[in-house]
Image (tube, rainbow, N blue to C red; front, side):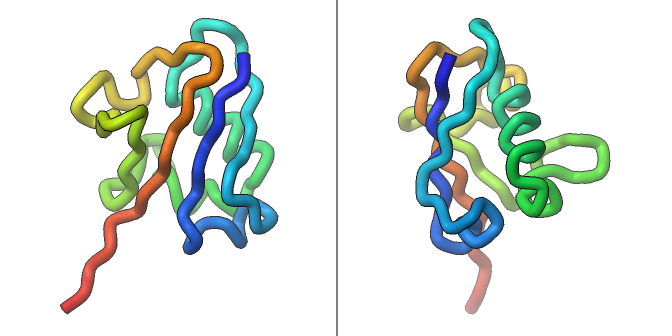
Length: 94
């Protein structure tokens, strides 16, 4: 199945400049599987999305529709074919 991952401007250079990346994963895959494939296809994203244990970094938010996956089943959130994920790193400043 195909899942679209939308990347913010700050992460696009690590994915060849792409705003959207299509990720092909087996049917019944989870957000975690999509992240694994995305990082395998674009290794420069690895340090920016997940930590050494493969967990989503605290400052990275991933949305499935209007829902933050942290409010669902996190990386274990199941996906349907054609799902769209939006990656948004938190921004701090003052």
